[in-house]
Image (cartoon, rainbow, N blue to C red):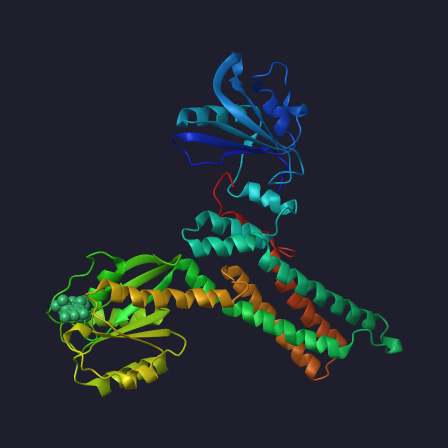
Length: 461
Ligand SMILES: Nc1nc2c(ncn2[C@@H]2O[C@H](COP(=O)(O)OP(=O)(O)OP(=O)(O)O)[C@@H](O)[C@H]2O)c(=O)[nH]1
Ligand SMILES: [Mg+2]
């Protein structure tokens, strides 16, 4: 995958803008750009300038054809993003100028970069590790505050540092165990068993915690799904429209108004939420409504939050409570919010029984935006608090898989240790644990993994 060609790409989007940035990386970048750049200061040469400096001048093509006035930034190896010699040309942002300068550079023998190739070189030159490279891709894609924060934290190396510390300690132990194997005839013990045991225990907890953080991290990256359910006519669509601040769903007093689900998005406290308004759940013969109810059931499975709405004036309170309790039982890991709606119709409802059984219970009128907003605030705070509890949040599928595999090997090591199995077996399991942990930061990687990660980048990054 890696060659040491000098590469070029447009780092800003194609099309017109105030300025565009063209990036060049590789050992010949400075000497080649020297040939097409004329400084405003007569006689000034790029190769004599110090690193991290900016120079005003012109890009001049063959036959002294002037293309643009530009700023050229110089980064000398190793003080650059890729670790190689780099140049960034800030030119005027017209499509014509971008293409003319790019083509001129290519004619001078620099090739067009592949997607992610700059970041790949940063990785090869140990400027960043793999999980940081992935976080850079996430950062470019992040569209809300929380995703932005999580990816920044990962770029700073929070996950990699944790993994590196764990690996280093494990490596120390495994080296001592291997040493014992070398001296097996003398029957000596180098690795203190009690220390190894408590370390394995500690490691297990840390990895479990990271694995657990994934469901939250993943939900936050993709947005949290909130499915609104309840009997027909209780005010689900009214609540939904208020939440997404749009007349999205049709509201009417006729039962079974919403037959298909309707989706809307909002950002609360920097977290993206997808709300789903669904067909009211009831026994019906209408084939379209039956399909709607089936879809509702499927959406419930996928959601992180179930928002159950009922009509406060409904006489069958006991039946409603037992319905809610069976939902709680069926989905113990989901957050269940319950709303007694249409509270404006009367003051005489008694919900003591509900309040004592349901952690998130609200009496509101969905017609009143401020009351709906109160529910939304509790909802977003719930997820913000969950995030604050976690020091590190795993957001990449690849990390999640590697963590699960390393936990599997670790449990085997732990078990082998408990049962007093031989040192060589324990050391095999620990080495496997090390291997999977090493895949996260990229200390151990296959070419396929690298290709897969860097192909997700855009050209110029
Ligand atoms: N008084 C009062 N009426 C409400 C309130 N919320 C909804 N309604 C009314 O209740 C009726 C049903 O509201 P919808 O939002 O369509 O109910 P739904 O649960 O989506 O109904 P389906 O789609 O048929 O399942 C409409 O006439 C609403 O105006 C409320 O808080 N107070
Ligand atoms: Mg509806």
